[in-house]
Image 1 (cartoon, rainbow, N blue to C red):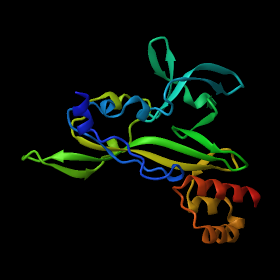
Image 2: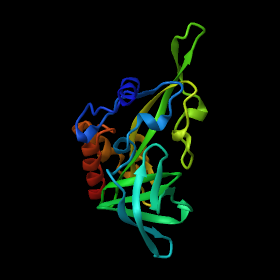
Image 3: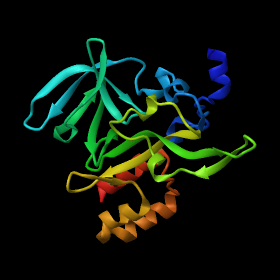
Image 4: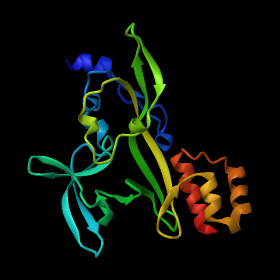
Length: 230
């Protein structure tokens, strides 16, 4: 059975360096559970649940065995035999797991990958790239993902359900930058210039000289350090 699952579900393959990770899509065939195509080490941030601290507004914190689930986009914790998602996420200030810090912002958890005055954050989740519809001959044809399948819903159990059509899923990385108000914006050239309108010429000169790729971790960290020096 495991061999059959392996043949049907294409597993994640890292196709680039750690500084610009890319993941191959995973095909979930109709009639299969989504979770069966994602082993534990591919759907969770850590190889096991690790003791961490959840800090809430007011300075209070609690300890629990924690792990981040890419499929559900939830920070989960263990309670006896149950695996549960953190409730009241809007009350969370930040979460520390091992040496990593997570913030909850605009419906998603962001992991801090670089400190300083302008922090670089990473959002990781598994996205439905497209669905495959079968015609009367049993042949699959690709179609764009519908709105309801655009991403696996946070707080839901969609990943445990059985697919009713062939689906292409892919682990997706998006980078964010902290702004001066304490929030986060997606790390794009447009947003960087909007954050620093008075420094637009200096930023454009840096981008021209350094050829920054906005999907490359190291490039974005270096750019955030430059922004902090302005």
